Length: 225
Image 1 (tube, rainbow, N blue to C red):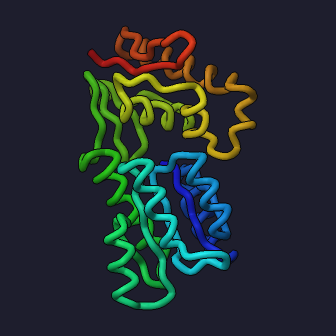
Image 2: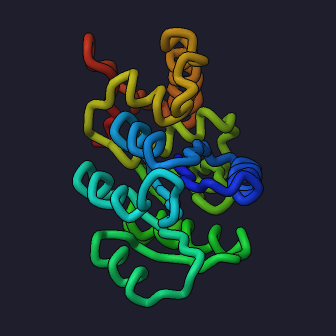
């Protein structure tokens, strides 16, 4: 999943980014309100973890722009105090959950996974299409109970396609999902084409069907019908 951490404490930020990156998640960071606001306006995220007390503004003000942009982004607020009023205000604005500092990153992980399953995976543990099953816990693809070996990028790309199946997605949206604000590293979308081509070949080899269709001049769409 693609996660934005908005936190001004460097040690906590480093701990969260390192922990969640170790699970293969795409993690981005913003140490203040201004940078977070720019990122939220520019990019889409599966989860945003936002500290309410930022040096240049309240993290509470970031919640409406997120929810106005998409209802599918999960939001967890972090607060240094146990104020019920602040928590209720955040939840009423559209946050999905909250944690009071200090906390264990393992608990944050459990909260994030619960929100991701509920909002992005629509409450299911596994994603299915035809005879394929994507195990979201193991991050593994199976075809008729046999594993189909995917690279991390191919797995991320497949999940993105399946969640958006039968909808056209642009090359830029794919690149943003996989590389985030490191999009320049995609080498002008050549890397997107390479990963997409390899994924297409593996799915075709397993099922004898081409699921990824090209929408010329626009992008691609994943067809299961």
